[in-house]
Image (cartoon, rainbow, N blue to C red; front, side):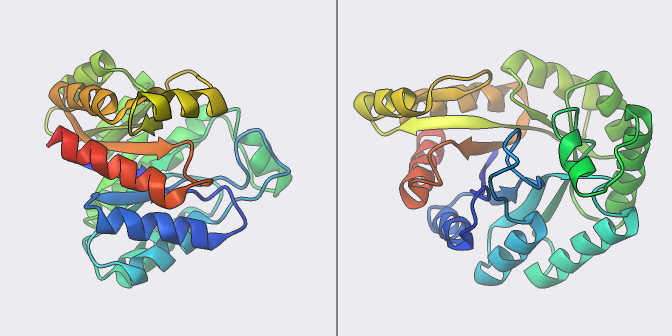
Length: 263
């Protein structure tokens, strides 16, 4: 199983994301990923960096880590522009390092589209767009994940020949998806809070609180949870540390300790 992080892009300071990516590369993580939001979910007054811009900057500063979207929302750009953005990222990264996560977005992301004049069609049309883009990426040889936990996204991924990303899923759901997908990869993503000891864990929980799907614990506790996901068939686990804007180096280094504990 490969282990990655999402980058801290909900900020107006790109150096935070670049520091996190450099640390991820240094501690041996396998990939860095960027959300594709115009503002943090539900917070239109806060900034967000553009996913492809951040990933391109990371790609030219690193040589090893995979760079990817988690997930690029079909419809924010015309399909041909989205495919061109992935192709440009492939060129910048030197080839073979890009992972194309694509998805439809949901009702929580609809206000972003409307605020910037991007269409937000009904779910069937958005799913059709994801299938078309994912199939084109697969044909171009780009590893592709379709984000979403519904049966409809499962079917889209299967028809496109793409893997899946199950954000916030439990081990049983990962195992069931792995069986459904046969040889296609199933990946996991989710928010994490990792303390280097019990005291640090409790301090982080006191500051950030618990929320649905959050994986929180000490290094060993989070490593044990991710090991269960690996046993269930997850080819990747992508962690989104809640504390990495405040402490990008320390938060990512701690995820590196999780990787060591798993292996």
